[in-house]
Length: 532
Image (tube, rainbow, N blue to C red; front, side):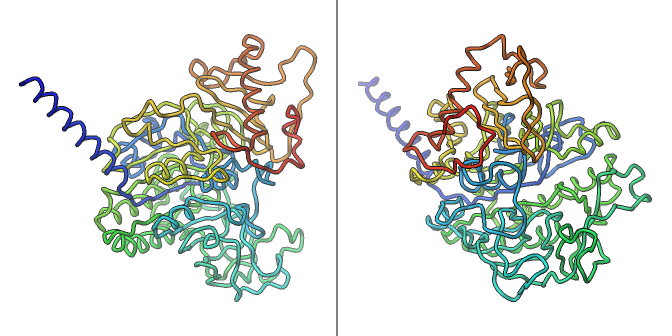
């Protein structure tokens, strides 16, 4: 009888425990995604103890949550990574087969395609975005011709699921330099600017030769020597104030949305920053503070702006039930070599390559999550994961079913973060993509680069393979994270397995289980091994 009682008590406690876990998972957290621009894995001091600057606020996310040590952007450049983050689908399935888009034009996110924002909005969330879009939006008129800035633009964030938007259209070197709110231009960009050498020898004795600014004076007419290089700019636009402006707007929005969250309507805030992408336009308050030049100063300002958001969540009383996701759109810009040689700072750690490259430095990025109510602090996960997984992870937490025509490349990471580890698809693959539109497939310890070389040019690179040369590069990343020893000839069976798998992932229009989906097949020389 005593044994029966103990068994019954144990069963009851297990039932209560499981019930509490289900209720915890069903609780709708607020969600904040902070997305930096060109930040390497080694640009977080919690991930790089030898960093030449400190990032205490980003470190706080890492230390109080989970670090994915093998986390990747879906691409080695900006636009495609942003598409995949928001849609859970690899961008190379669209018309964008290589490179990035500009500021003005049709949005890459197709009409009626589900985004994280639209999914959450349909499930009772307030949705907001503050920051850089860079998926294109349509303004009235053309560059320097028949512009009417009084008219609303279309195909922007509020057409893709966001209730509120404040930000800029793209990277600052792509133009239309003015602030936007919802679907309106706040100040007409009626003047012109271009890249200008950053001249500040007093502050930066070892100025990076690649650094530039977008500062005044601005011109009233396009630059005659090459008008297409001229960038439209608003008279009051100041590149040094962009991060400060974004942080203040984000805090303002959090304060508004937090009150509704306390009353049962959670919020989603997407905050893609413009740093540390060039130009390194550090606010004067942060100039000269680090031993890593302007880049280090810019990173410390970036960290401070992240801290302002964390403080706002704390002060508004919603931090405990807010899932924060922090990552970068690709690896560090090619000036990572300058930081390494001049300041001994390793933005890409010891990974090969950087932004634009198919090698690990091009897409292995800081990949952090914090949710005090549900994620154990100090967690480290070494499985390969991708930013395209955010959609399925959020859907899993909220018990939302994703239809077959959405999130085709999104795997839920929630099992890795909960006690359902055995439910995670450890057999999944991650696809990498370079600026030139070339591919790599990662599965377990193995990575097959479907080209020879970095693929780091916006122009497709086709290297003539001489008889007897390896056409691809195969690496065991567990033993060789620096991708130094090509095992193509030593492991032909692994080469064939990975080649067949990436072919299947491309041809079926998805990498997750579900009905095959359509995709754009035209103008795609980079997949010459696939019979489309």
